[in-house]
Length: 104
Length: 104
DNA sequence: ACAACACATAAGCACACACTTATGCGATTC
DNA sequence: GAATCGCATAAGTGTGTGCTTATGTGTTGT
Image 1 (cartoon, helix red, strand yellow):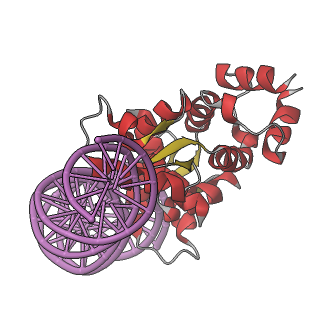
Image 2: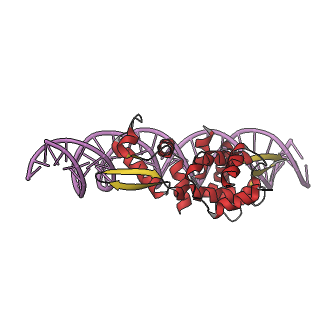
Image 3: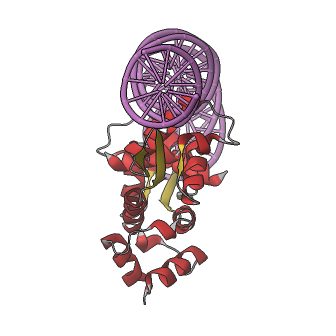
C-alpha cells in the first residue's frame, strides 16, 4: 500500500527535513548530509524510504546519485486529502494559496 | 510539533480506517469498534492519538463520547502540501476536484 | 591496476509503538 | 445505592523502527 508508505515516510522528522531540502533544489546524498549531523548509512536508508513512498526519485550521475522531489507522492497526498474535502474549513490561507496557484 | 503528530497518527492503517469511518459520519467509540476486531482500550488509545493530532475531536454526550472529524488537522495537511505546490503535476484529478470545490 | 570516492546493504542494538489484560472513573438504570 | 455501561488509563509485552559500525558495489582518477 503506497498510501501507507507515504504517511509512514513523513512520520519521521528527519525525513521531512530531507524532503524539504530537496524541495529547494535537487541534490546528491552527500550534499544533503551537510549540516544534518547524520551518518551516511542513515541518510541512505532515509532516502530509500522516501523513494519507496514515491516522495523522492533518483537520477544516477556517474558515481553520484542525484535526488529530487517526485510529484507522484505529493499527488497521492492530494488525492487522499481530496477524499475529505467535505470537512475542509470554508476559507483558510493554505487553500486560498492552492486556488490561486491552480487558477492559471 | 503538531505536524509531526499528524503524520505519525496517519502512519497507522488502523487509525486511517477509524478516520475514514468518522468522515462518513460522527460516531461514539463503541459504534466505531463494530466490524473492526479491535479491543476497547486499543480504540480508546487510537482516538487519543487522533485527537492529539487534531484530526478528530470529541463531544461528550452523557456517558457516551461522540467523535467527529476535526477540520483543523486536514487544514494543517493542506498547508503542508501547499508548501510544495511548485512540484505538483500540472493536472491531476485530485487537484481538479480541489479547484472545483474551492471555486464557489 | 590500485586507491579514493559515493552510495547501498548487512547485522546488531536501543527505543518507540501498538497491542493485551486489568483496573479506574463517571454516568445511567434498575 | 448497587449494578451496569461507556470510556480512559496503567502496566506489561512483542514487534517495528532508526540508529550505529562494518562491509560490499560500482565509478572516477592517477
